[in-house]
Length: 189
Image (cartoon, rainbow, N blue to C red; front, side):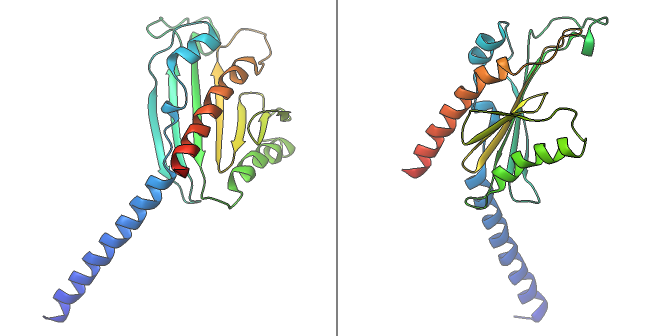
């Protein structure tokens, strides 16, 4: 076998091994944000109908975590209101991250909210909440950590002149945490 053919064959085999290892890492970390909440749970929390949700994953990032986002429209089909904040658009967004096991990255993710507030990047000082292993309300959403998973949930229903509260996000967080617990039990079996 000539050297060029051997090199091409070795490269193909190695790239296949790398691809397989990359696929295995991705599948072990993969999380689906749309599977963490149901439209019925969201509707119960916000008091309005929502659509089935749209998943948009970033996949594995440079820092090794898998990122998945789900976006649900509140009152789908409702015409925009040009006079309302955000043209009256209402939605729920859930961003879930599964980090490599045992590296403490989910905690660092939550700590970054405090650092951002201290540096003036986000306007509000995070307020601790009692969900999962660690949680905080940062003014626009609830960020929670459970083991090596972190997630942010935000309900956007703008009302002129009213301060945002964490009430709706705090109704949704227990549903997400239950599903994460079920996922952990399945993977342990």
